Image 1 (cartoon, rainbow, N blue to C red):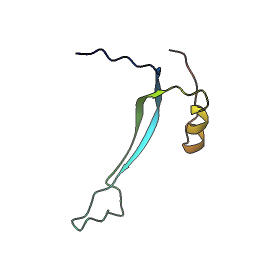
Image 2: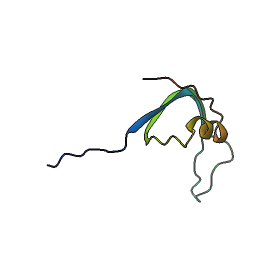
Image 3: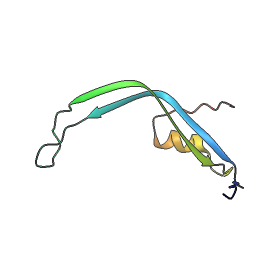
Image 4: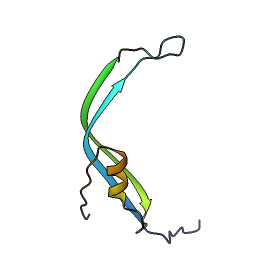
Amino acid sequence: MPKHESRTPLYKVEIHGVTEATFYKYNKDGTLNTVPQKNITCDAHSSFYTMFNPEIDFAKVFETHTPLKIEYQDA
């Protein structure tokens, strides 16, 4: 089996925080109920890998498009 080497470094981005989720049931006709079935709030963790691009300010992207406030930590 050939060895795979990545020439572009990948960086892991981790998001930790409190998540709120609202769940709705579908009706038999395919529409959603107007009243949610369940609403939960919990601690959450999400992570993904991305290629590092110094031209992209990931903190600014997240803070612009989500309610998240970003704090960098070296791993």
